[in-house]
Image 1 (cartoon, rainbow, N blue to C red):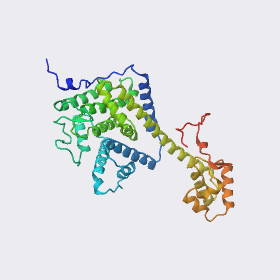
Image 2: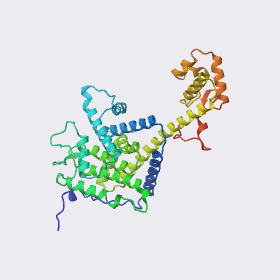
Image 3: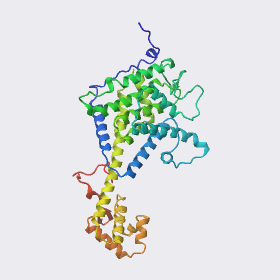
Image 4: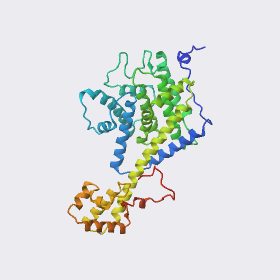
Length: 398
């Protein structure tokens, strides 16, 4: 008869089993919604510059979230500049930049490996490699060795990690479990791949938090594991950063849910529900951004097509006018139209009020703007193919 390992007495909730079948229709509904939204994002058509901007913003959000939850104080704007390689910081802040740079580099490493066709297997060596990357060039406490499971006890916010002598074994068990049928959709239902990936990524994160196998960087390592699982399962790259962002934005609830999951004896359902809801909320916001960009491009193309045949000067001036109006939700008073932005102001600086009046009349006739007692507005809704008969929701781009 084999002897029990110490963690089985100290951490009985680490049991490598999960059963959420039939427990909550709500969770399965939200998982289905997350799947649907990921598929919509994957099929989104954007201009290359807009797509690149989306990747930059969400990589920055993910890197910031992953380090901010550990105490990093860089702003989102600073991390965006860091991703763009334009950030300059004083020496006193260089250690903060190193933390976020490690995450940026680790994320790019994962994406580059997959782009080059090299597979990244989620095994103990890969997890150790992630920890080594997130701690690279950082000043660490005595006894902390990047990429090496700890040999000492660790306590974080009153939570004691699993016994050090069991950490290697627990990581091996976790990797074996994540590869098992538990997280693999039935062969006859390949359409469930994304749903199983969401569950696998969140559970992997939770178990790394429970085990706490390393002397430092466990949370950052867990979030890289999430990224690897999601991106290799077909989740669009910008969406793979949303869980990290959610944990950071709801930091106190994140820690409360982690604490609750272990104290409940390993009931993972509340943490899953919390994580999936945040993931869906992030997907909604991402889709709204994509929708706004697509709407803007369709509207600009439509405006340009309606003004074909005019002289180049009049056409350019009118396009600028309409697109500048498009950035305003409320009607703009006629006297304020030449001040919409510097380019519009430059066009009308040498023109008489009659020119402005003629342009307004032309654009009204073309159906591109309309005028009321309060001012002029762009008719952006013209390019919405299927406008509802009810008032638009707040999620509809304005």
